[in-house]
Length: 212
Image (cartoon, rainbow, N blue to C red):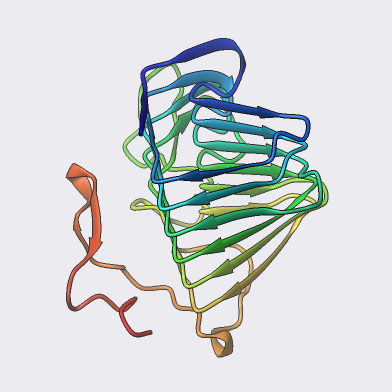
């Protein structure tokens, strides 16, 4: 299933909007080139959702969270498995890939990469911005996953922890301003994607993320 080129300019969830107990599983869906004020790809409000084997790519938020925005889960459960969240854009912080508030999110075997802040539709040479933002009462549990911004640096954080918390194991995270334990198998190394410029985030055979 492909969900392309939809618009909710003054609303939430350009590709998919999930509201008030509409628990569901999104499986093998490509959500691309959608636009909304918040949650350009998907907006989740007070619902339990599983996202499995899906792609949330190249969506735009005119305010915040170009890819996926989460405002509370009905029983505190959002699960993302084997999915790609890439090249989404928002015009303001927070969370160009994912912004989460009042929910626990479990991310497994997924890649979140190169989500951008765009100002006046111009991408600065070093722009990436936070791919994941953890707002009030949000917890992300990240396992066997990659969060990577190509232009990471001292002022460019792939994860921003507002009033939330992060638990991470066996994951590869580009430069960040918090300290995570390498004893839990976390690394900070170029993941060596095959062709990220053309949207292929498959890992090369020499990637440090293979069998790590």
